[in-house]
Amino acid sequence: MPVRAAMRDIKEKRFAPIYVLYGAESYLKEEFIKLLRKEMVDPTYADLNYGVYDCAETPLEDIVVEANTLPFLADYRLLIADNAYFLTGAKPPSKVEHNIDSLMDYLQNPSPSSSLILHVQADKLDERKKLTKQLHQRALVLPFQPLRDQDLYAWVERTAKRYDAHIERENTMLLTDRLGNELRLLVKEIEKMSLYVKSGDKPGEITEETIRLLASRSLEQDVFSLVESVVLGKQQDAYRTMYDCFKMGEEPIKLLALLSRQFRMLLHVKMWAPRGYTQQQLATMLKVHPFAVKKAMEQAKHFSENSLRNLLAILAEEDFRMKSGQTDKRLALEMFISKVAMELNKVQ
Image (cartoon, rainbow, N blue to C red; front, side, top):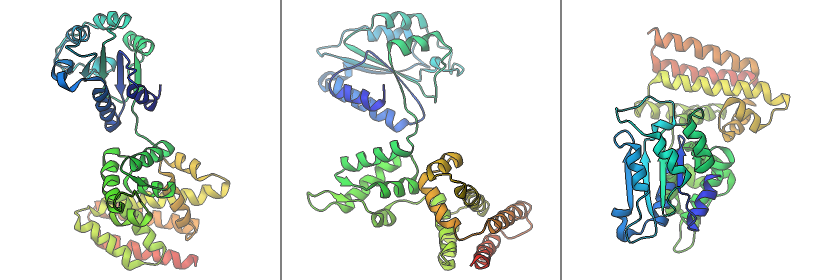
């Protein structure tokens, strides 16, 4: 069952007796647990009907006993078995011994008035284990993986709506390209922009201008803008972006590595786009955001394939010279920007 479907069931008071939550997307897991607690636990007696246990400290059989205990003056109780490492291939973090059979027995006849969450802090479960197989059959197993592409865009748009704002798909792509898919950061930025565009009681619209004005920038985005400025013949803007990175304490070697990655992407796009590869196919192939591929397609038009190969060779040489102490790191980056402009002039 998808996570969103499980959340709809929770809002309609249809609770599963056992949930297994795993995956790298911690923000969504936290939101899921918050919703379950809000809908399931009576706040009047929350201290008596809600418990969190660390499986590195508490034996599993003790947690199962709690799950079998009737709720106190309420309809339901919620228990969280955090750090359920026994469902993965990880080594035990402590000497606590777990009676796995106690949970296997509980799976056969779980309490209808309790929900037990097995929270796994890992990207995947160990599917070879008998307990894992039983949980797939008798519990609600939910993966929380980082959102990408259409799922990420839809989540951003739903979140903006939650904060009384609207955002078009093109601007959603711009925002996620600028910030990535870290949901915790996206929520803060969407909330900030929603407050900025709101007018009285009327919801506002998060536009491209709003994003460029307010959204935080990543180092990767600064490098992207640096290349964009060079391609458009705005060398002064490129130098300004580079000096801003220096002021923020960024290491020139790291900037050079990101420039190398950007120009490799331009070369791949230059080579493969004419062969019929779509923007989405290239994004999958290069493991980057589709919006980044779209912009790379626009930038690559300004270079010949030979020019991009020459620039990548220069970057490789400067990387060696920087690391071996043969050149001033900042000067090397300044010279590279000039060489990019020279390659552009050759094409034009």
